[in-house]
Image 1 (cartoon, rainbow, N blue to C red):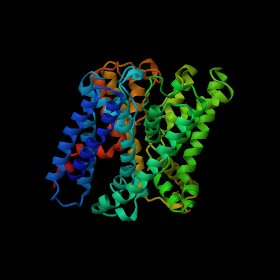
Image 2: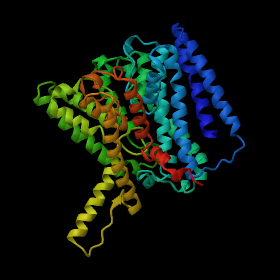
Image 3: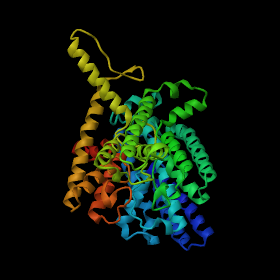
Image 4: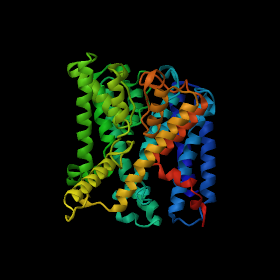
Length: 475
């Protein structure tokens, strides 16, 4: 409760910022944010005070429960401004928008963003910015200790015991926060220099660095029709998808880690390869040719691959092969320890190494082969963890898609919605939730299912699913 109370209180304080934005713009919604802030801060502070005298160490069970409860509490309170402002119809839509924001998914149910109040637009951007920062700290400090989905590969020596999570996480998060803020400020300045209005530049810089995808315009980044803005967005989406610990090490004078990290190399190679494929699709379909085609291909590939979810053009019109291509790459994701989502590059590397070892063992039965990641041997427990994660990922995707189909959605919407939710991408495929649509037309049941899918994907599956095991609750 101590951590949850602190986080909820922080969220309540953050609500003052959109209140100031609305007050400066003369919009009466500042009262909504002020009331939300007071209620959220009061509940958070009460939780903090109630848990103040409890021991600060965390067992694995407590760490898992803390992670899930904290995220749900933040989403629940983050939904209050959406509901009380009347920008959405009811708490279901408000919860969906809040979940999409904090998990940096980018799916939205708000119609006519161009006319939305400035405070609401700022709140959406701030939710993604805070969510992106929280995801990095969680991926570095909590999930590796819990040995979730192979993330123990990145476990630091300081996290050998659960009781050391909080103090060390605070130290690391302060360094990462500085890098995160620096990227946001630089991105904002470049957007403004490229001709984007300053208010839009602030919000888009927050959602770009967080690879979130919330925009202030219905046409997303495509609204600005600017090559400069597109390329700036591409660069910062990529920067947000690289492990932030590597940036901290670089600032400490250690350049070797970021230059030699195999995960970064594979990620950048994947981006380049996928961009070339998409470019050829756009070119031979005569939709976008030359450098313009390269720009549109690179933007949409990076946006979907990193789980950002911005749009500059409706790539669905490029043909069924393009639709299938973008559906596949939405599952890939970026690097571990970044704001991006999806399966993540390192897991594909681990699977490749395991398969290569098996093939070598078949061909040379008496040989000794050891799979490696970044030059270090991979333990069999890590390989088993990654394989389990991939299996559960596929099963979870299938279950979510089947549940969406049962709500009456068409096959394209159900499949792409399930993939987009569990991969935290944002836009799906088809006329309803595709890059040119949004999630407002979906029924409430579908929105709750998708909200659950977003949380499941963001917390790396095991963190949620283990709570459903009876053994977890036994002493």
